Length: 241
Image (cartoon, rainbow, N blue to C red):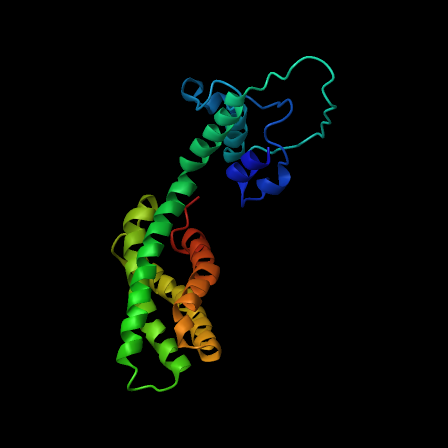
């Protein structure tokens, strides 16, 4: 139950609302929900279909109410649950989450972010080396070097995300695209330049320049990625209702 719950609903609010997606009798509204599902192409014809129903009901905006159910210990007979059932559940959970549009979008976002991270990393090294004879203070030098590298990474991320990750909400050339890029760049200055540069600058100043890459990783994955994912979805490429 916990694996299915985590796999299907984390980190959304339903992760905390649905405590056991695999157990119990489920009553579902047909009109507008079940009647919209493709019954001929379910991922499972066994136990896993219940997870698919629940997951798709939630995706359609259904309200979920759980009524506690307590099982006693089995005293007679044998369980109908077979080892194949666990495999069926894992398979259903994986396919549901993998084929979810948000998951696919996040994977693309992650790939582009990883590419941008590479640009940022190599740019940081190049600019830091170029500024070595100009700026003696390690923290200040790495702050400026990361700011320059991050700006190149930001431009790359915007172009690739617009063409691939958010192609269904793609911004076309014109006033809107320019405005969105300005917003994107401004927000990225905070999430991709100021915060990481402060983390890298302060970290290397305190612990030494040999930890530059470590603090870059901490800054990007702890601050930049979550902030960018939120801004991209809710500001830059926000879906029109």
